[in-house]
Image (cartoon, rainbow, N blue to C red; front, side, top):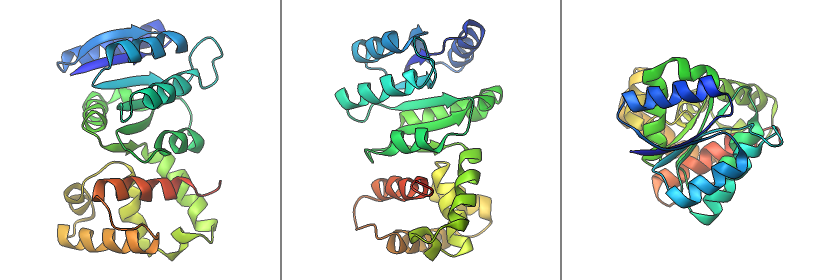
Length: 217
């Protein structure tokens, strides 16, 4: 699997390169600025990009914006964004086109190689993965809101929380210790209560997560 990596801190970038190579990923470019990231993504068209949000020259959201521009030019390009902070808007921007193949993790997660690599592979295969700490922040916001999410039962909200982390129905069932059939029923209720029209389930799962990210503006 071909990877473009963007991280401005040399030691972390080198560590990520070595970790991914140890799991049989091919690093086709490892860059440290926003402009270099955009160029690498457009030239290499990797299977997945692993991108730090804050890159030179602005150290704001340069990496995120380069990744979003690349996705505009290469629709569906898988992107896993790494951030040091919980920022709902980062995840919201990433998911806005509704096409999936998106992940948003806090940098602390890279210290668990198995979990990190699993997330990279999930995003590369077209899945969605949002950091549990981001989800926890959204849950707090949802509890104060009066929008569509307020229609969900606590059980349905728990399913949506795990869905937002990128888990499959089977994985959610295992985590909640209930049947996969029950998860499918909860998922159908979530789609209905969030007014998501019938379409491919993967697409509706992304839209459901996006609805979660809309909480709090």
